[in-house]
Image (cartoon, rainbow, N blue to C red):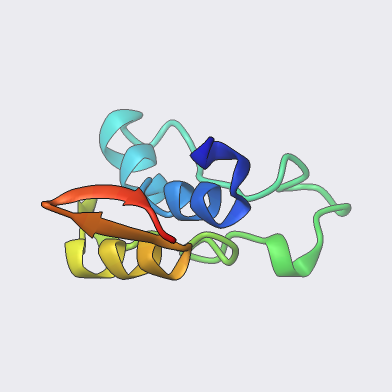
Length: 90
């Protein structure tokens, strides 16, 4: 059920540091992108990767999550924490 909430899915996407993955996991053999059209004349300017994701920016830096920012993003998406566990808000 939480995956039916677009705000929840958007927050999940912000938990992945694509720049860090491209450099550390793929040893620079990958490039982070926002659209499949990246590198073509068809890619919209607002979806071009210019050092960071313009749609779902990572909630942290250098592959490390900023946990306070993550918690706040989930709260903004309509969720809350009870005893340290993320639960659907009321």
